[in-house]
Amino acid sequence: MTEASVLSTFMTRLRAEMPEAVVVKHRDASMIGLPDFSVTYMGHVLWGEAKLVTVPKKWDGHFYRQFYDQVRLASPAQSTMMDKLCRASLALYFIWIKKTGLYVVNPLSQEYSLLKASTDGVALVKDIFYRWGNSNPPALNM
Image (tube, rainbow, N blue to C red; front, side, top):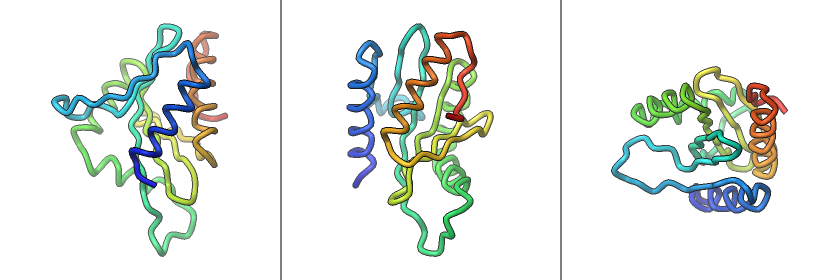
């Protein structure tokens, strides 16, 4: 299991579940901090940064925030870009934790969802666009 394979599977599921949306994987290495993918639908854009982390051997199954902090500290330029994109539209970190689940975090509000599988992440993205389409602000709690 690699970050690339997890993201590829996730994007394939997004495209299948949201055929009207434009789901793009970004590969422009010249743009430092550009998130891994975007989903454009119904006049809105969601930016996503995917990460795959390994659970430490001594982890007690709590304090998921440590994974988010680890991701933010690893790339200050990307953290700054994610914050800017979140102010302009919506940007989320999709952090897959090996053998545990998917942790989705809004970098500005610190709001998060802890999901069991990638399919739940797809459902979350669909729900965010549904709320946007109904003039409700997007939220991560399902």
